[in-house]
Length: 357
Ligand SMILES: N[C@@H](CCC(=O)N[C@@H](CS)C(=O)NCC(=O)O)C(=O)O
Image (cartoon, rainbow, N blue to C red; front, side):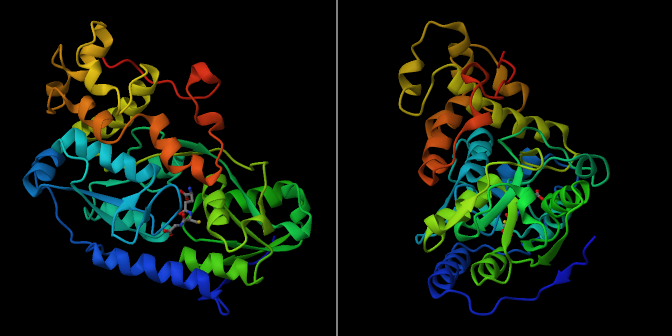
């Protein structure tokens, strides 16, 4: 086995990447975000009550992963994970825009959730036994099925992870990626040298500067990093994954109703796709005679109130955020990320959620 090097920072960071990240940090500051956040406990009340009293949802996101959670020049967040935050806010508050985002590194995300600084962590987080059993979080739903792999310079001619024997690999600490890579190299009797850097922009810069031969993370994350690189065509994301990495929002286990609100907010986006509902068609669907659509939109039945939500909770999600297909098409398709496993079951994917009934 190789011994890890803990790198503090990266020199010779390409200017265009520094500019992009400074812009990101400045926009985050402008939006009033802080990684530390303000601890606020619900002290006996429910999370839903606390969110309503406060008037906004506190959502932990990444510090900037294209397609999942990034902030634009106007201080607005976008991405598949951001849409989870927005869907929960639509369900809980009737307004998807009522979210305060807290950018968190991999190493800091779980402490923020445990400290009560955020109501939900929606941040390319892999569901694992240890995070469930030992850290004790609840993972109400999967919002993206992924897998660990590698970003490498095309000029190296690497096509498969096995060809990375003897290389230096950039990683971020506190990730399942670290363990996946160590396991993979051990299993195949290969050697590597990890370069572990907490701040993702510094880790990416270290890779870009040639300090590492490869960068490892979830495949979709790497596709986003590659898409933002100065010359995307100079890099390849390996097609073969070395792990299963189901990503999903995490919450504290103490409030069972909140766990369900998060779960059904994600399910509603998938179910909308299953029912053929979109943000553009949901208003017309209010007049639909189909019982499952009448229940979904809250025209009939009392489903929302069973979770303390408005009858129109799912309508609000689809109207303001859209279906899972819309979220994918808005956030990941433009980066060239294939939908693959993340299609509906009837289209050959894994998305299959219970009925809203
Ligand atoms: N899915 C993996 C990896 C997630 C992760 O945090 N990856 C890093 C490496 S690129 C990242 O996204 N960092 C973004 C950030 O620190 O804001 C996990 O849950 O451990």
